[in-house]
Length: 371
Image (cartoon, rainbow, N blue to C red; front, side, top):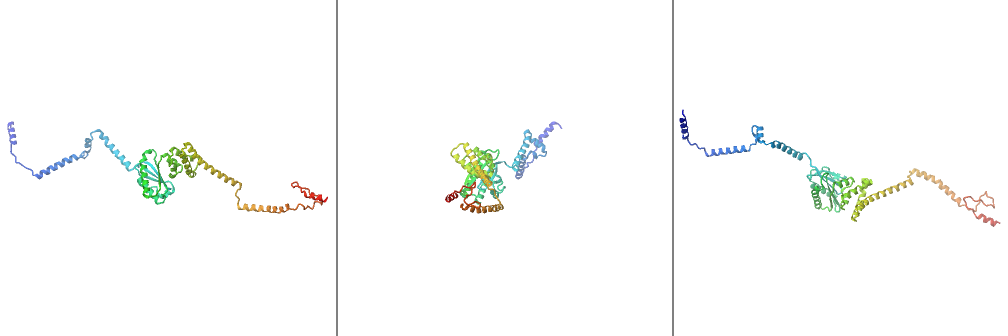
């Protein structure tokens, strides 16, 4: 067939009239809906949902930083989950309370109690070590005050010592918001209960806390110095007097209130720091000297008159009885009339005096009368 015929046939085919076919309206809507759903599904499809996973991932992560970014993100997520689920938060502060029973709360960075440490037998009988574990510190303080009030330790005219000090390697200013919130909780609890007790709250450094605990003191005792606004170095120097004077814990605790009263009066008189420290040292040393003198006096009395058994006393009484009898017999002889003469002395002669006896003048007078 020639080219002309092919062109003619092609033109005739284009001009060939075809029958008109129309799609129903409901079918057309269904077709458009299905096409839109397919397009939306293709847009939502992730690269790793393809049949060839590795090829799809390479096409998606065609940039180099994505190869490193995905593992790093996975490691960071694991670290965050590990710390949240398995690693305990570090300790931030310690809160010590005493109204005769004394205990210490360990508080972490989240403001929750991780441990409760009783400081004397009374607190040990009232509070268990795990009593307030994982409880908010404010709630724990309120519950402790309620328990102390119900047990009768918070009465009108009494005191509640409340000390807060930071944990090691924690700045003191960092615990100030925590200390303020704990103080507010304690004050609010005392007002609600109407106990009438006085709240003595202080924020101290870790050095002061370590020194007064090493000296064997409790919060109600150390507040005697904190009330007078002593400097921390002065308080530490006064507490170290126990070690300098070689005092045991019991003796130092017994003398501490009197010493604190003396140095407080000296501080009010605005005496220099050295004189205040010397006064505290002399106060503790003077009481020690008085006790040593009393012990020496007791020792001397024991040496002068040693203790004797009842049998020794009875034997001594028996040995003394014959001497008493001899003395009783000898006394009448000494009272013998001097006119009586011994038969061995001839009449008209006087008895020669004894060396230890004074001469008797009466015989001479009798001789003169005879002459």
